[in-house]
Image (cartoon, helix red, strand yellow):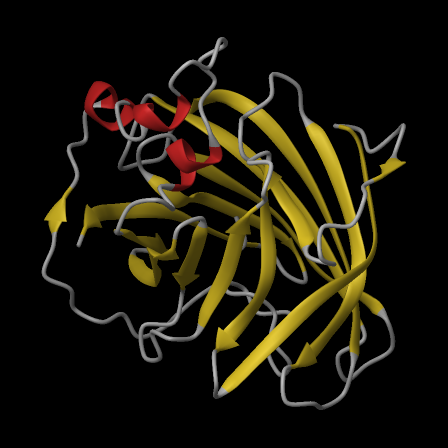
Length: 257
């Protein structure tokens, strides 16, 4: 999961949204059992019961949540389904159409990232020139065949072992503009116990992502952070950023809308 994608002018943003819109909502049950039931139908017939990315992100539901830092709300996210197998998330409550857009691959094995922004207004297409996959230590890396030049963002079915994804490519606004070169490296870790101060006794998958780009500056690293997604709760369960400056937050409220 990526919080608030790095668009030109904000490629190194810390995934915070200062103004949070008021939303009529019902808070999800806080019990681990109730939360763990979310999305079980997504993995019918799956042998190991580790779940799917949908179970942890809640992308197939009209789900939303708020995350906080330092005793205040730092941001808000919400998912929606745009078409069968197409999902988008917004972190921008002032401009709800500013969204990251994902597609499930034809073989069902991957969630692919198309780009982010506002379709028809200002949309940034991300296209891959090379991708590789390896173990959780980012060793034994092997090329990933292209899937329409879209980034292989995360495996749909959660594997028992961690894995590393390393994608390189370009970002261009769909109506033209400067081409930005980027690299996005992710290490995804399998389910493990987790907790924050609001939701104890959970199970999370972890995304450790590092980002490089040349957006208005020489090509350099601009972001390093670790993000946990809690099964049945969703995005931004915890965020621990180490670069460009230390910053942390945790999920404080979730609901369906």
